[in-house]
Length: 435
Ligand code: PMP
View 1 (cartoon, helix red, strand yellow):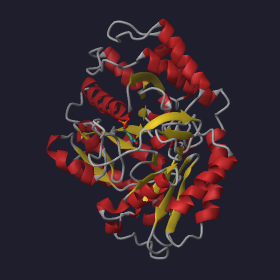
View 2 (view 1 turned 135 degrees about the vertical axis):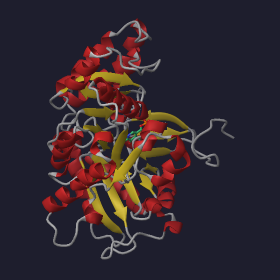
View 3 (view 1 turned 60 degrees about the vertical axis):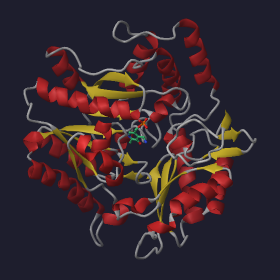
View 4 (view 1 turned 135 degrees about the horizontal axis):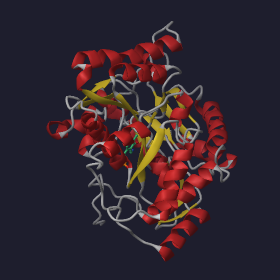
């Protein structure tokens, strides 16, 4: 019996012993196609020689240097690579060890920014329903999954939530895509006026909603309108690209496709690609300078932040994703994946929507395609799909979707970008057999 304390105390999980390319092998020799990249982490698969070599070389020279005393070459080089490819205006990188830490840092930095610019009355955030920003108390407070937050509500940051941009379910009959995008973005302004815009620090959103919604991108124009509203009321725009960033959607930063300039972006999963735990918060020069010229000290920090070995791994990953031959891979293979999903499930009576960008795709399941009515939650479609897929040697990321009473079950697919066409066919076949 495992003595490792995981999420599900009663789960009897297979023991992973080896990874090779897009496959993971358990202690019985069974192979699993990593169809979700372990939740959009393993963008380069499991045995990338360049990343492994980068880690080994770094171990030979420097293991650890506390960032209170020293910076390190891999940390500096990673930061400059990220800034070179980040959206305009983003100028400084804060390196942490994962997604929740990146979001937590973003929340605290933005609060401190408000203090530095003399707006201490700004104490709350607005985020969106059906989104996930992490499990630490700050990140959880901004997350929009009621059932996740509920037990911890009394001890979390102050946040309220607006509707996500979710065309499949929420665009009205006859409403143009553009009108829908403006209408749903305008909910931010309504919420600001309801709570008092002078009390709000920032608006937090995932450009493409991942874990809780199954790869839901915003419609064109939505984030442009969000930016206008943030500017009008002096509210920071924080984009959480922990899951959808690092090339996953076909561009290094997902927000590049939404034509929007964020004040802060958070990244994590694909940055370490599974080889090392790492995350980053990237902020605008304006925010950084307000703190530099003010107290000169960001009141935050973690012992393992900017770890040289994690940074060396991430350096190798970012190099591959930018000028190392994988820059277009997620876009190209993502088109193939989308075509394969459309061919297999496009007419399936219980698949209501196939969506996403790049190698970040979601299927939403419905009891009836016309009415889009979700399955009875007691059927636990997503949990059963997960089990059937594991039996069939496929790891995918299904989610019971009716937890907040409105959405259908879905599955998130986020395979490594290195997949071949044949491997994508295998993924789709295994998913189909499991369904
Ligand atoms: N933000 C988003 C959008 C995420 O998807 C996740 C993880 N699923 C997090 C934050 C938290 O990241 P971590 O699990 O690394 O703390």
